[in-house]
Every structure is written in structure tokens, then in C-alpha cells.
Length: 113
Length: 116
Image 1 (tube, each protein chain N blue to C red):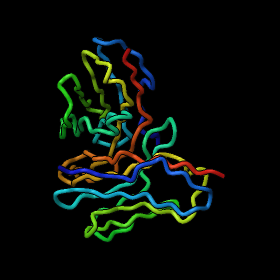
Image 2 (cartoon, each protein chain N blue to C red):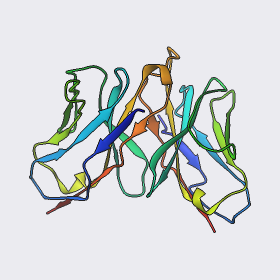
Image 3 (cartoon, chains in turn green, purple):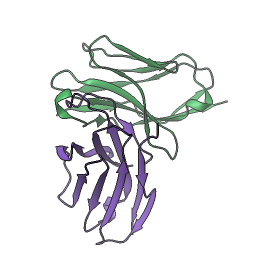
């Protein structure tokens, strides 16, 4: 079946460090890929997305590239801030499955000053 | 534009009771999806409604049901509550002008349900 696997957390970094959160997927077909972020006590916010192979999604300094050959969508940021502390979710969906998002298990990021 | 709103934000129920959660999508959005979030199972898709019809359904028992009204507001109902139903229930809406399920989903803050 279709699934998403993320690197286990928690991830603890110092401010201004480089961030990578790994995400790989298993899918029949060509899904759209997403990164969502959840701050404490809140719902999910879309961070970025990519809808086809080699697309790069970017937002607020975060980037991820849709790699079909490695079935990956790793999240990166060059310099993290304390305010980036949150849980990050990788997800996929198919155009013919409506609003159904399949999520990874989430990766908690903690950034220390 | 107001975001997705969910009511109530917190609920405490006892086993065997039933509960109804409400979701108001962003104005103009026609699709509403529901998800259950638990520490053990993570985020799982419950169902999606589009134009008052259930378009997709996840792998949950029949105790979980939902509906959508003509103004796109949605409710989900859980009957005969079990301890394992304790979770954060998230609602998401999307525009879906083309009606093919490709638009970005915007999430509400969730309803925290505790079953005692």
C-alpha cells in the first residue's frame, strides 16, 4: 500500500544550524508530496508542496525536492531559528483520491538558542 | 478570510456515550476532510465530504460517521465511545473548484476528545 516514512525524532539543533528531515515514500503511481508543520496546541499548516518529479517546493527558508528515482522528499533549511521548533509531517496524496492525505509519523524538531 | 474553525475545542466523554464534532470550512471551500491524530497511530484519514456527499473513506469502524451540509459545514459523529477514541480530531477544507481533489488542504486547530 501507499505509505510515508520519516526519520525518527526528536531532532535537537542549535540556532543557525542546518536542518535535514528525511522523508521517503512508497506509492503506486505519482503522488503529490507535502510538508506540514504543527506548532504546539495548533492544527497543521502547509509548509510546502510539490506535484511532480523534480519540482522544488519552498517557503520560509525551507525547501524540498521531489525525487522520483529515490522516492524521497527531504526537508531542508539552511539556518534554523528557535521559532522553527515544531513537529513536521511529510504527506502524500493522489489526484483521484480527493482529500485523502497519507502522513508520515512526524518528526519533532527542537531548536535551542 | 477566516480559517477553518472547529467546535468544541475540548470534550470529555465517558465510554458508551456518543459525540458530535463540528467543522466550519474556509468560506467558499467545498471539500471537508476529517483526520484522527493519536500518539500511537499518528494522523489517520477518516473521511472526506464534497458537495454533501462522502467522496472518500478511511479504515475506521462504522461508529465513525459524518455529514456535510449545503453550506459546506461538516459534522462528524462517534457513537458508543471507546477509550481508544481519545484523540485530536482535525478537520481540513479545500477549495476544489475543479472537483478532482487536488487542492491544498487547510487545517483547523482540532477538537481534543478525551474518553474516560
